[in-house]
Length: 118
Image 1 (cartoon, rainbow, N blue to C red):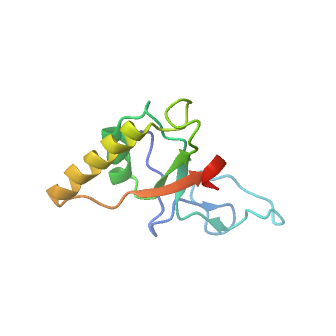
Image 2 (spheres, rainbow, N blue to C red; image 1 turned 135 degrees about the vertical axis):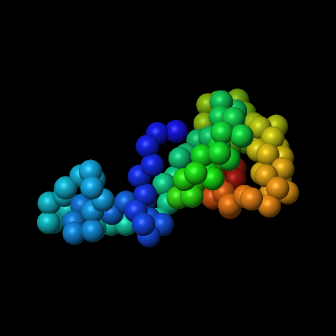
Image 3 (cartoon, rainbow, N blue to C red; image 1 turned 30 degrees about the vertical axis):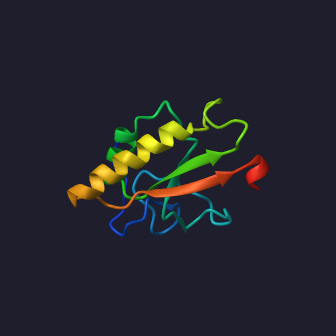
């Protein structure tokens, strides 16, 4: 899934400034992002091309990940970045299965609503 890049405070990174994570970009003093801390990193547009098992595995290893799920009736399951309802059911089944094992950290989701859902 890539390299782990977490600070010791449950925060993904501090962008620039005094508390910066090594390797993070140095920002100039007047930059509005200087010292900005991120609590979650949103990965938006999960769809049927993503394995529910892999999504759960990533969430367990990287607790700061939030999955953005796009909802728009006319695009749902028909266009990339809009998961089908069948895929969402598979995801729920995977989450339920893991929760029953008792060794499962919460997964963070954000609903991105469009069209008639707004």
